[in-house]
Length: 459
Image (tube, rainbow, N blue to C red; front, side):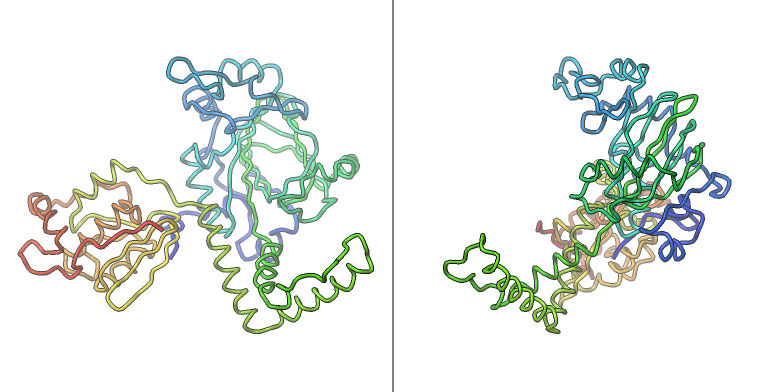
């Protein structure tokens, strides 16, 4: 079960980046061609995500450390020592951003790159999580802050798709068609440096000045460079590391290769320097691989392996929204029937059912509850906020289940409300009930429908 963290009526993240609906984008643009859009055709802007003030706050007050920061000038990346250093007593490690050094380099024309903003700036963290959920591929966000009339990086291509959101100032972009279509992560532009330079010298496919609110989608492999105009320019680059058919191939080969014909040793005395000896071995191996891939049972196993592999990667690449440990424990203690909770945004959980147990499986642990809680678990994980009293359990049991899942990081309090804000509840009832909860006994001494808090096991 998956939640995308959007409340009712919220615009999708993708619709803020491109002017076409998701279906058309998927069939006509995704991985195929750039989409440049003026702010007037997106209706919204990006000031809620980032700003010039946000840059100053991150540089001056957030104690950022390399590699969350880079600086570059005229196509060359500066050594970290030029813009970082120790932070004084108690913070002597020399990899911390030095705001005075940043000022010096920036005033001298260097571009500042704030990396990993999906980890350090909350509005961007939420937005990138939504976008990744909608795309089905992981996303990360950098900000590029460029002084007037300065160029940060030479023409190059990225090995991931990007969305560019112009935040402040103006920047002139030149975009050229690929010389290496759909590059993989281990195929950087520097492998085709001369071809990239020659292509960048020709007529661009897009030659535009970006202004605040403008946006660009750029598939991986498209060559691009940019230059600030007239003042400080800030844009966000959202990198989308698309899963590829090459990933499927690797899983398919790995699964198919586990057959007797392909596990066999090469001939005794095999000489790899003798092409006439290598050729028949390759032919026989490829034929055996094709035969294995054609076996229906192997195909079914490949489907399962690909699904499992990409699901595990997706969980690792796009973790759920963070939790606030102290506030969560306080909310759990104050939980009452009118408290509203929701599945943790971005959570990816599997629910399995056995004879007497329903288990919520997360990447690092599993939480087991009695089977009577199944309906409540399904409702709690469907992505919609719910008042605990609305769950298909008696109120005492519903509080026990919700409290357990809240403490395990499966749920969060909905809408920022105080979990215990139940005007009609007697606070002493729920405070005194904690011991009963632990024993799986309701406040009147009868056995609770949920039996106990359940168990949590690390995996």
